Image (cartoon, rainbow, N blue to C red; front, side):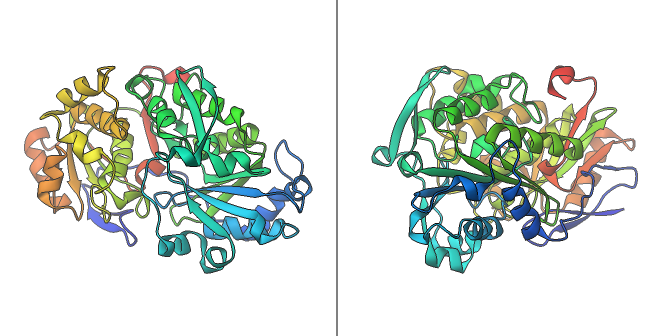
Length: 428
């Protein structure tokens, strides 16, 4: 049978065995009138006074957005926020691009993310985690580091964070406080947030908000300089808005996480020999670094010694910025990579993604279908494939004619789990 994986901007049709199990979230329709739904949420927020009533016309307002690797529809959300706050002069606003440790966005990319009108009329800046003069210390974390956040955010009179909510491979769920931490944090704070102990904790996983140290730390840090208002949405496979969650940061985010969990998490009776996954298509599948998320979703249900096939376009390469590729070159096997990262003396930004990747590679073989060169794929210790159907035929020789196959066409927008797994009661 045929199925279409989210891949790049246009999708990828793949022929899979008829007995394959296709795993997708419940198909929610987009809202009939997205703007009306968002404005209604701003005027009747969760646990908060209506947004317009909270903001004075003289306030300096910071709006924090997620960067280009996330499909948050800020080309809609930011104009609607500005419309609701029309009593505030446009020169009083600053939109801060929450890059975390990622690269700056160009002006053309800002236009893609926010629309021409916003870029023309509102100041839009990139966050720089390494620039100390652009950061302010706001406290000390119980997790063992000083806490630095973006200076313009901290000094704003009114603070808004936007985002979208989906299961996240070590924070439990995206959105909410993650827009601030790590979105606009300093590198010292981010390195602690993503250190080997935090990422390696078994409770730092998909869909878990209970005693998850990563989620606990992001919430702790948000409380030191809390956003005054949150606007988050959930999306379907067409990137349409399916629900809006606005208001007080923690209460509104919890409400959104419960909604996302109900629709995205799918129980499986057993693990599979082969799991085919995407990385949710553009913009999340822009590089191999981000593709680890799709692999991590597949890891939840692939047998030990099984095979993951990940389709991720990687139009932005490995990428060629950050330390992801350099860390992979430091050792020859995934186990050696893990041992290196788990050494407390090792501390390099981007190690967290390599750590998650190595855990998957120790468990299962991973084939990657992408636009990357075979050399780059092999450097990352993956096996390149240019024909998924052919790869499936070859894998029958390993697993036999009874080879079990699961497919995650939407990648990490679907989070499958096996009931017998440890921590089930806590995590799900």
